[in-house]
Image 1 (spheres, one colour):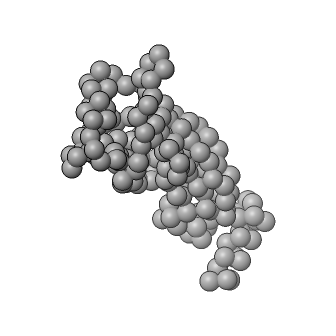
Image 2 (cartoon, rainbow, N blue to C red):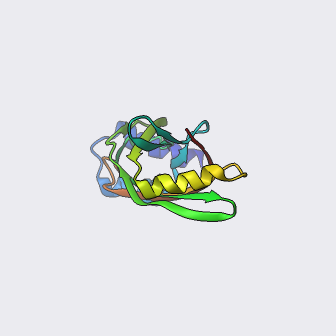
Image 3 (cartoon, rainbow, N blue to C red):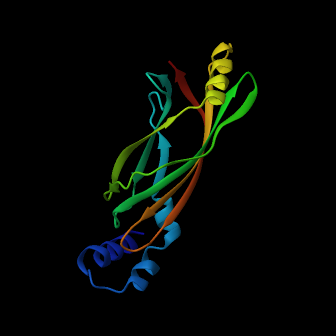
Length: 167
């Protein structure tokens, strides 16, 4: 394993003009996908609040564990489901966040998405607020990344039992 990492590191960092086919052979797409971690932040990952306009803010964390490639986030598309009193209800079927952020090698980046809430969504939240159990949410996220080696890398992740606050 040491020699593979050593050789790959030399190819990516010191022999810059090597063909992309060889680089893809050495660092396959599936390995890159394993090096991308998508999660939500640990403190208040989802917040519903109302100033003048009721909104939901979701705080994602994306970690690039790759030691060879810098990534650029192209977009995040997600579905948000609320769980309360043994029911699961969709709040957003297909929301998106355009961030175009660069994540360097071995770097973690926080991305937040803020979306306006409509009246039916606000009514769902009012029902959840009346419940006795602490509310949780599920998110299915599809993230798209670009890099110098791979274009449009798609990562899908399902996150469950995420606590949230309603203010």
